[in-house]
Length: 421
Ligand SMILES: Cc1cc2nc3c(=O)[nH]c(=O)nc-3n(C[C@H](O)[C@H](O)[C@H](O)COP(=O)(O)OP(=O)(O)OC[C@H]3O[C@@H](n4cnc5c(N)ncnc54)[C@H](O)[C@@H]3O)c2cc1C
Image (cartoon, rainbow, N blue to C red; front, side):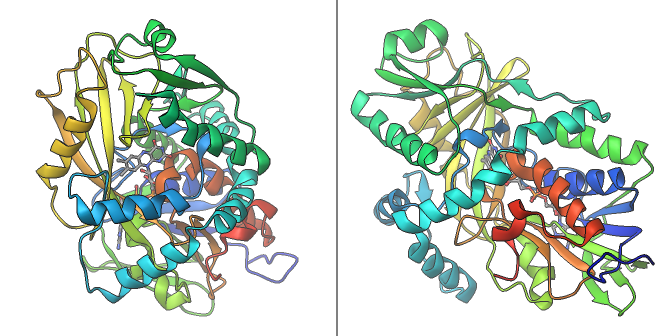
């Protein structure tokens, strides 16, 4: 096998574990560099959090999750089970490690540092979608003609305006307009009379995430990649000249390298390769409803933490941050909490006739940065832990990781995300 200038093996056959946005984008960009890929998922394409999310491609507001305001929400959550962040009491040592680390990083200083580190990968986000679409992925990312953040009062709006100032200070461009409630309603009649202030964000996009990830999988397969569904990877072993990937269903196959892209389950396979950071499921819920006036783009109610996205002729409504095990069943009370938060803010939305009720797990890290790159084995890589932004940053992640795996050089945009930090 050829080696990179730094003496690392250049893989020719790679197993990617996880057929979500991150795994499939990595597989696609590896193919761009001539690598043969097999994508393995225990269920199938977009079976994890890449299906029912809000589908926003919003690098302009892709900020680190731990922030001073989260601490406030956390405290409120303990007091009120209906709040948008729910932290159930738990004695799980991994969860306690996560909460301690997350709390430590929820300072303005840590936020600013992580934000600055996110800017280089954020700035590649939309362009990486263009590469996919020009390269044969049949789905399209849509320009968000009016990406509206809506508030009851101008005072509530101050939080995002301040955050945008910090985002700008970190070097991240984000153009926006400030609107009154009436001006916002003139653009988006789905906003109720209770909306008194808004911000319209410019230059962002959105996708139908499930459809997009399936189109990405189709493109990987059309270009000769294998997609294995219903295969749970139980073990990855570095043999010194390749990796042996064993599934619970009994298949054993050798590859030159493996990429673990298993979302909220990343820790299970990555830990033994020196990846010590906890990836905690931050569970979110969504459903779709019919609306009288379908918005032209995503609508965000930041104070209620509710995210809405027009998908075909329906509105997907998403929200909640519930720190629980990713396998836990859907809890109908969380759906109700989103419904009651959204009801006064939307008009003409049939919130009592819901379809596609869904729960999925944002793969969250304590410092708000993803885990992307080589583990202590030069043949085992990880890509995940993007928290709220795995759809926005999936393609840029795959592009950068494929570059690293084939050239042996860590792209500058990936350095802060090293999985061994
Ligand atoms: C309510 C909600 C709204 C969101 N909105 C947005 C948004 O608007 N924009 C945005 O950018 N992000 C958003 N996100 C976050 C985004 O959904 C995630 O960051 C992203 O989907 C993570 O992708 P992934 O490929 O890393 O993981 P996943 O999509 O979860 O994929 C992991 C895959 O690994 C498989 N797997 C796990 N273990 C194994 C194993 N041992 N063997 C084989 N396969 C395995 C699973 O079956 C799964 O298919 C949202 C999330 C939620 C919950």
